[in-house]
Amino acid sequence: MKVKIRRTSVPPKSLLEERRVRGRGALPPDLETQVRKIIEAVKKRGDSALIEFTERFDGVSMEVSRLKVTEEDVERAYELVSEEQVSAIELSKSRVKLLERNLLERLNFKVKYEGVEIYSRTRPLRSVGCYVPGGEASYPSTVVMTVTPAKVAGVPRVVICTPPKRGGDVEPITLVAADICGADEVYRVGGAQAVAALTYGTASIKPVEKVVGPGNRYVLAAKLLVSTDVATDLPAGPSEVLILADESADPRLVALDMVAQAEHGVWGYSILVTVSANLADEVQNELARIIPSLPRAKIVEEALSRNGLILVLRSLEECVSFVNEFAPEHLEIMMDNPLEVAEKINAAGLVLLG
Image (cartoon, rainbow, N blue to C red; front, side):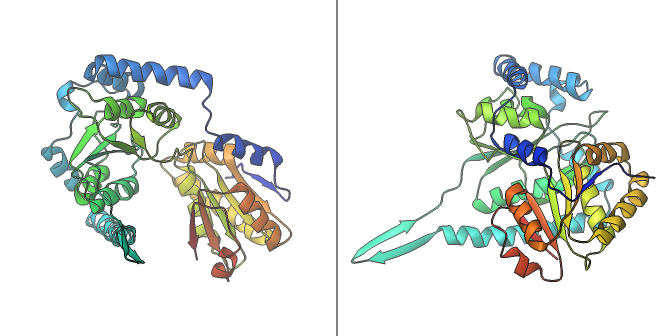
């Protein structure tokens, strides 16, 4: 199999301009109009609008009584996941919890100066709504990264909204992660309608004080539109990864990380930047071996065709310059000297070394 992915030695100007446009936060007029209609429908009709939109957008017909996930649903979910998956979620939660506790401690401090004491104290919100993407894919990591910090902060009511799969069930591993991380309520609803429900409330879903979590462009648009009525996290565009690698990198691991990103959807970027033409060749070969066996192979192929890129530049300086101009959400540095290279990066959301 030959993977269709752009390969070039010159950073595409069109890519950088598109990246800038994505970062400006303006909504396409047609998208804004669609999402406003969804939000207004939920505000006016509540649960009945949620049921209507779930059938229209997710292909799931259900009664209002099925919106909320039950304890029995969670118990069944545990029967459908492996012990290894449960252990992985527990380990991930424990690591995030450790980090968040340390961050919280640093936000609470006291300063004494010339007889004056200045205190900084944090107080938890009373409720937080976590949007977890779903449907035909599962994102337990989103559960861990949204619910765990809220619980460490002491939020007493943490709510998850996630779209159902065909048939009306929620992805089992998502429910298991929600239980392990301490979510108080889980609802089978996704998209802009979920954001509206969390913001304004319905008969089944009480409103929250803050809405967090990633989603597609409809979710992003909804969060931007309701942000005058409820607190939200920073607007997140399509997820992306940029991998900066040299010949010491394992080409299979590079390819797997590009594939893992591409599985999120067709709009996210999966980019390899390197000075090694040999590594670029090997990564392309690995992609050709990996993709045909994937359950979401078609989505991965389309994502890499649309927004995949292998960029072979002349020097490390050119690579670093491109990374800083692109400003990726996730940057992986797979090089002999990752710490040294990381010191040169000043525009990236999350930097992973090794």
